Length: 179
Length: 295
Image (cartoon, rainbow over the protein chains, first blue to last red):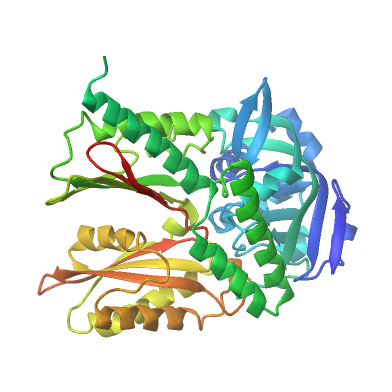
């Protein structure tokens, strides 16, 4: 089944998504990979507030991605932006999505120990290696945080249109396409 | 006036730059043909969706000349230098300069992070990086350079096994099967596997990576090695890992084994895992700087 989801979204809209369904996203998403996850974890442990820009990402989607970015005429442009291996974030992801109040993860390869049921989170798989076509669906770089981590490790706030096909690989009931 | 050597160096630089762009923005025909064939055979809707996107990505990346995958990898340079090729000033300097320029121009993602400070040089160059391997070819006056961009997701699954000679030959296909089964969708399957059998620890890993330079579909010249390649490939394709780990008939596109003599006490097995997005480019020139081939 094919679904269009506008972000931010209500958790109720994710309940009907079943493994194997195809999803296209519209609206705001953020990228975060290894070092951004590490830094958010540190903020949680030190009970420090995140930069203000993070207030707007509630109920959007977190994309495991380290994009290629080019600055053209003082504006950032996404050149290629496929997913990175999500499993590297296994140990911290539950805490992070709870803290950020995010219920959609996008990545590749799936995640272990994800608390889908209690955190009401779904995991969407985007085929790895398909960074070139992904860049067409990312319409705007809205903001960037933590560029000191390097441009591929920074947190990019993006506006996407018809971002997909994303395959529901882990659903809210805890069903998974991975063995 | 530029000297003959300077002209030759400029030619090498230009060809290197073109080759890096080709490696990053295009895919070998064997790989796109593989997915086109697979699409015809595949009856599962999830896999059809994935294959359509993969093929579209190959076409779009080539058309607009942007990196197929955002992970433009660590660029591995393999230089085959004829012993009669003129002596040039420095391969390291030439490659560093070209890689730095390509990083801005194509652009590439910078994958050069200091392991202690976590600082990314943002240039793709730095200590001992990018890796360059030089092999001297006797009785040749040509220069051939192969560029293999190696992404992190697949490389993370790579491993060295030091087995016992008493049962190493029987055990290693099983150990590789376990390794790939455990990896699931992480290395962006369907994968290509490079295996280095024998040698010592470092040599088996070097051979395993070199095995990836052999074109897809070409088996080892030695019959017994070619049989092992096929046996391992078939065994991996029983795992039902499928495209990106979402299940399916194909987990492995090809297995390439290279062999080296081992120590009587050791049975090293180097395994280098490559993603389906197997990007590679090469060129060869003669001592006059004339192009023999580029691919």
